[in-house]
Image (cartoon, rainbow, N blue to C red):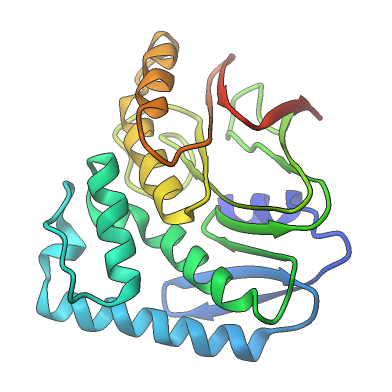
Length: 238
């Protein structure tokens, strides 16, 4: 599965890792100590926000375009609505990244370093340099490049694929990876940009569109033998 590849290549050196599963939510977490109890309780609270809101607003689950902002919605829902509005996709396109981000920021009060991975969508806080290897399915570039994350960085790293996994994508990219201080925004942007990649010739245009999204700090696109990169993060060969 795509998730297992991410968990194998994230390399949580010096951290304790564990898993949390609640219904559809399947998280891999690495922290300075085992925070399974704290993480599990917070995941229940986060999921309760989604479940309660979608009972009253079923369109939230189904919409493929942004919905009007609801200032009375719970914090997780507001985060997803804002990410959708910035990127032009439905709010559920941000759900995995939003859960990673909210859970990660909650757990930071227990651990200075943290990796929260949810279906390949990552919230990362690191005090040392770490390298995140890019998995891109059957592309010959898969597992050949890594994103260098500098010390003392907090970042969301989210990936959309038209060829790997079961997440909805209208594009054909093997991987569209987006980096942002917000994992929710990175998740929504990865979906939006991934939808635009139909062939290698689309890569320059999609990078240009991604640069226009406020809050995006890095983009990596892999389709077949083509690699496109933009942003503040260094890409290195593995």
